[in-house]
Length: 351
Ligand code: MG
Image 1 (cartoon, rainbow, N blue to C red):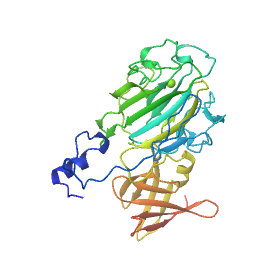
Image 2: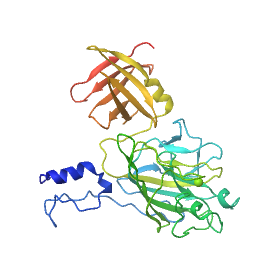
Image 3: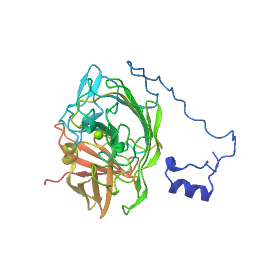
Image 4: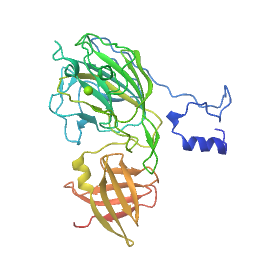
């Protein structure tokens, strides 16, 4: 490994990896010391009646057997069902989201609209693939001989960009979306640094070419960006139609240090409270938006992201915290610190 120049280090620290389009200046052309790309078994493509096999480094979000990766938007169990190895929207039961949060990623989704087709325009086979929890929708719709407004058809970035072409198959057949998502970035003051970008292949046909989203997608009007975490769950829409999904997988880009999850509201609620005292310090845990916790210690407040059901990490400092339980699953303490060394334990105080 060559030592990066100060200039190159500055570039590396200031720009997210996935946004860097320029060659890395630390390596010569054809440099024999340059690390090899990781090996990935690419899997197999799906056929019209058989789902394929995901790449070996993908996180499988739905593989036909269980919905363990999916919850309702508040984290409670999803009411969507598995029928014949397929994940099906139950109309009126609400959106579903992944437990895990994702920033920049490659997402593969297969879906099929109800057959025989029922309804028309936006009422026929409507669902959606959302990034950023419920903010950015790539439309799912039966757009086979079903006229609707152009920026609301299948594979539209809803209300913003119609697909370049309509690549729909007839109703009931499996459609594929292969999406490259680049999350928007916000600075510490909450100002937009770079907009979200999205590339979509519909049945292998390029339909969105790295378009820049104007903000969250919405039914009426253009909604401005508002700061949110870079990594958030992916969601599927309940728009009142029993749209089916299969073979959903994602590859997170940029090698983040930890996996991240948005825990159920009910779990986060059990952690809220005061903990202390240890060497004159105490800890206060509060909830903050987007499924995160805030941890205040010695007058310093850190936003904590879940890496498991009990363990959280900060993005700005190498601090982690872990909640501890009695046998009866009651939260009794939190340990805070660098997990390798200076960990301090704080007992829970009665409310
Ligand atoms: Mg929709």
